[in-house]
Length: 86
Image 1 (tube, rainbow, N blue to C red):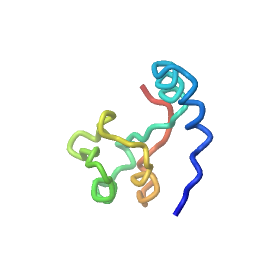
Image 2: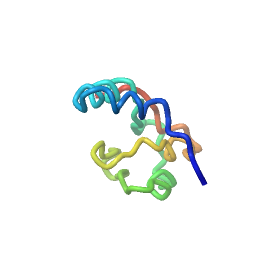
Image 3: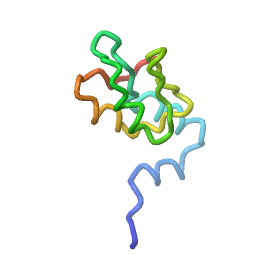
Image 4: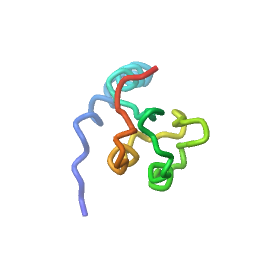
């Protein structure tokens, strides 16, 4: 099956890599856990394809996270927030 490459692919091929990283790091929303809403049910941790979530510390490992947002979609308590967090 043939897939069409996303428009962002062409942007990444003409700009220097450090510029692309800078752009994407500022515009891509990242998930974080809202401690007040989290019930520690573990669904987010279970569905995370890369194992980036730790409910012991309420942290999402930024180096592992691939921004698939599965955790955000599956959380029934609305405890996974998306934003441009530092």
